[in-house]
Length: 477
Image 1 (cartoon, rainbow, N blue to C red):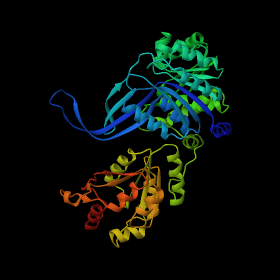
Image 2 (cartoon, rainbow, N blue to C red):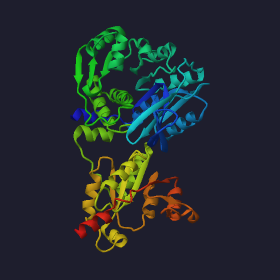
Image 3 (tube, rainbow, N blue to C red):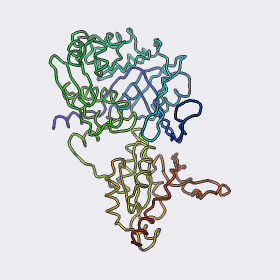
Image 4 (cartoon, rainbow, N blue to C red):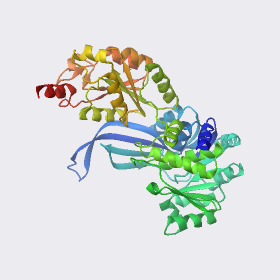
């Protein structure tokens, strides 16, 4: 295992050139509470949205999250999706992007989610071949000279052409590819071709993945990796090697192939054998499929998974400041929420799950015992701050916990500067709007978080469930 640790320590600063079909992955979250009178389909009331890098851009985001430096090449349209994709890529610290504009739409996948269920997906795309300008090809040649390895993320949207592949091969650098079947034969002689089992069987016209892998290795004159979901992966490199899946729970497979591709690239660049690169990629995929939606995996996550290192989630404010700054430097969005969380109940769980979906990282602030007494009275809290912190930290969707003594959290927010401050309840900004039990927003809180560019998100609380009601019921009994 020490050699894997050494490989991971070598990830930092490795240079990867990623070429292919960049995409914008969009998530529309809402509630489907009725069927449309126009057709037998659910009506979704959209409540929030999320945008993340997809396709080749997601490969680049994963390389960045793993500590690499990326040069990313792809096509975008002249539209708002291109602006959003550019903004997201710019926020990634170590990605130099070279996007060429064309007349069609930016490739965009829009997923509509109700609860935890994806209802349907809408795709915007133009799959026609897209010629590269000479200026971009010159920039590509410059990036290739410095690259430790080349990744082609080919979703068959038109960014990859025979001429482009020929240019990449002439660089003499190792190339790893994730192709769609229609373009697979462009990649004869590259170092590694990664496919899923359906794609491998389609390309080779074989009825099982073992036959498909052996056939493709001979046809393509390349090493071949076939990913098989819950059955792990098969590597064909002159022999046949089977690698088991590493996921503890499969939540969402979106983008898992991009994570595998990025991890293999970083591993090979750091001096790993192909076997070890696949082992690390399998672990990375196992982490990814436990996350919702398109998401990147970090070196620290890999280290914790492989070496069974459990990070202490409970942090001091000074430790938490460093943690938050580190995630933000990687382009991650940090969500914060706070409260007493005395007797953890169903309402708390639902609220914290919703809060976790708003960012990449969820930090929970707990009022200290002293501040709870000031807020709730001398009979509270029922559980000590240490007990409450340990219980909240045990929740899988909570990333970090800190205890604070103040009754007002605004100074701590100004110090920590999370991207999103999640608050429970229905709030209004103007007292003239007060009705139906809504509360007036604290303007000092709002100004404090907006002063550094953060924003507040409100999640309605379930008023029928509360610690106070539970405590009162127990006392009556």
